[in-house]
Image (cartoon, rainbow, N blue to C red):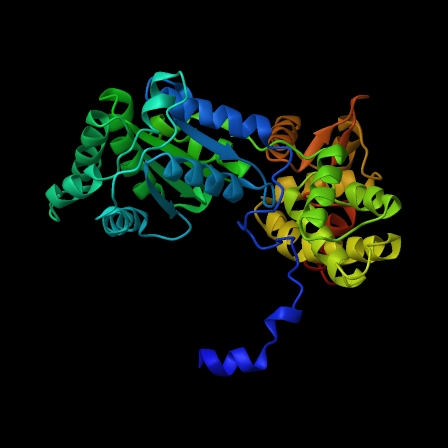
Length: 400
């Protein structure tokens, strides 16, 4: 089959698009995340006593949480850590973690000793780079199938502590996780990492709504105490740097006018930057042809359509009725409204509106302007808010 397909495809003539608008795919240029990566790395290399040894990434869809998880997994794996990566999007989280332990066993068995960089001065930063990997096989051979998750984690962490390395567990999509499973995981991590101070690091990611759901659960003490990292918005300078570097990395070119337009069109979400770049590359016929202003403008138009379907509408459906109504009022007031103006349009208690505004701001739907008004963000633009509100309005009016 492979030989047949090889005959049909002339790989040599294919031009690979360097942009990656698939969720979780690592971009060619990871821009605007330098401080975040540095902070996460510092927390991991310091060890269990550092609050950042157990951290959460919070942000809206398209903000790059999964990409950061993957970057930290790569760093840890290259340093000799055992890395276990799972998602909580569906039930069976604890079973998937158990399976990841089994997978790690096969990944590490038989790996020979490796002399890695010993240049760091920090105790933890130094020891996690020591290797060798041979100890992994020994500890995995002693794990018993009938042990529960806490016992397996404890055994691994104890061996890691004795050999100057550590474990990293990453959990994505925590906002949609089964509450019972997450409570059990929280209890295990609390016991192993916080109480026993064993080197089991944790990095979780989820939508910002977790601040008002999962992290408000009084049975989730461990997650409440994790260091919280809000995904920072991209600046126009970040977008310009990311676009230019990615295009150049694939031997393409983009003129200055197109670059400025594309950077502005990319907004604050890394996912939109990838969409704009991907579309512009294809429209221009890069790398053979330069990306010009027309290609950038068409790329913006297509990116807006794709963002609506992939990001904005799902984000709208994450909200309750009060939050949706508040967004609709802001959109109707030209996307720039004072709270008193909003209140005049909504039949709700001031306390409920204040809470809704707080939640929407914390979750990246709204932002406060320097002159005290409230405005929409890139997450759901006014056009989409009006479109979704109109659909709801059709069913909220009684037929005469």
